[in-house]
Length: 232
Image 1 (tube, rainbow, N blue to C red):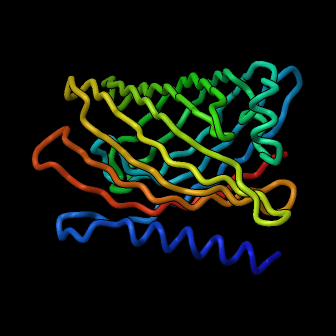
Image 2: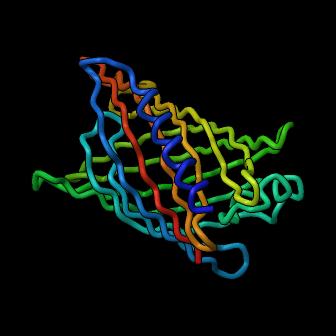
C-alpha cells in the first residue's frame, strides 16, 4: 500500500511539473498550506488555516486565520459518490462559511485584515463526477483603506480506487473580480489530487497556472501547491 501511495504522489508531481509552460516570463513558486478542521455539533465546523499565497496581483504573502463553517444535511447521491472522503462537506449540497484572515507584509509594511464569506454549492453528475461551485468574497482593510475581491471557482472531481485505496483527482478554474481595477483581472487553472493518509489526514498536491491582467504588464504564474488537511 505504501508503494501505491508513493507512485500516485510521484505521478501527481510529474503531471504538475510537465504542465508548466516553458516561458521565460513565467514565475514558478511553491505554496505550502495547512488546514485543520474540527467538527462541532449541529452541522457546524471550526477551521484554522495557515498558508502562503499569491493571487489577485499581490506579492507572495502569508495568510493566517479561523473560519466557522455551516453545511446542510448530506445529499444521498453526493454521499454515495464520495464514500471515502474524510471531508464531511463533500457530501453536502450547500455550505456556508465566514472567516477572518490576517495577512502580514514580509517587508514590514501595513498588514491586511480580511473578512472572508464563502458560499459553496455541490451537484452530483453522471459517472460519479461532482461539480462544485464556490463563491468567495475577500473584504480587505489595509492602512484605513478598503478593497474587495469576488472569486468564483468551478471544480470537477471524481473519487477513484486503486485496489482498496481511494483518491480524488480534480480540475478547476477560478475567476477574480478586483474592485481596485473594476474588472475581471485574474484567472487561475488548477489540477490536483487528494490522497488520504490514514484516518485524519489528506495530502493534496496541485498545479496552478494564473494569468494576471490587473495592471501592466500581464503576468503568468506557475505554482505548485502542497496542502495538508487534518480532520478531527
